[in-house]
Image (cartoon, rainbow, N blue to C red; front, side, top):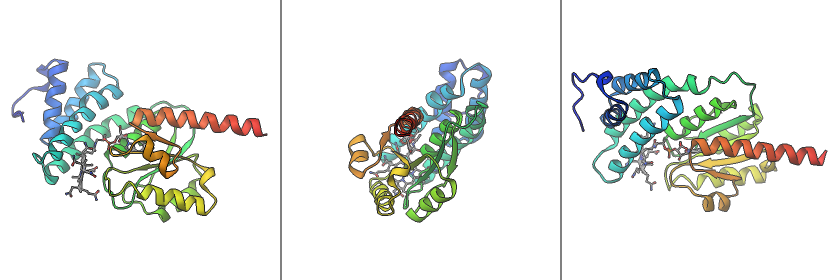
Length: 234
Ligand code: B1M
């Protein structure tokens, strides 16, 4: 990818800068990615636009080359670190609504899976939309989800999985909720690149969320639905 030594990012127009940031993300250059994020924000870009058009799009390129054996785990870790640097700048801006909480969500990446970038994005976007989010992190066993549900009493349980080998664990969690007669107490939303709607339905989740923006919309929709059901039943 491109050399960035001595390159003044401020001299680039928006399109060039975004392309350069994607190259820098690919090369794991955290400082440069952070600077790019700051410049785009200064130029009036919304945090969401910076997130999707510069960072997420950059990570998609990394994903393709990882899949094709061009990049390996150490390089992808560096790219992930650069992505997190950019996200850390955007997080407070996305969360800056000041509105009372719309609802509460517990979210975690399932057992056996350490991918957390997508989950972190969902958490950020949900916080930005006014939800209180309890993030359990990665590699979450069913006991961890259950303890958090008991402690925080959220409206929503969110689960993330990025591996075809770990996505079936979501069913373990949902089946355990059913066994304990707790399933109907929560809206269960699932997401992650290898999932789809058919899978979500098959494991008994309420909905599959393609991306973080869809997660926010779906959460709002299901909360409204629950609210209406409860009002009708009262
Ligand atoms: Co991994 N990895 N990885 N990896 N990695 C994938 C997932 C893979 C598809 C790459 C590939 O081959 N193309 C592949 C999985 C193949 C498969 O399962 N069929 C893979 C593999 C094989 C592996 C290892 C096994 C590699 C190895 O060790 N040989 C290993 C597994 C480790 C483990 O988990 N046990 C591994 C390790 C890693 C790194 C540690 C190097 C790193 C993770 C760093 C981190 O997360 N902190 C990494 C990365 C970065 C990736 C790719 C390149 C990028 C993932 C990502 O962050 N995407 C990924 C390739 C890809 O997905 N294209 C890949 C960006 C993110 C914004 O998107 O996570 O999809 P995503 O999240 C989206 C939506 O899916 C949705 O919203 C998010 C935001 O819009 N969403 C939700 C996600 N979770 C949600 C939860 C919700 C709602 C929506 O709840 C309500």
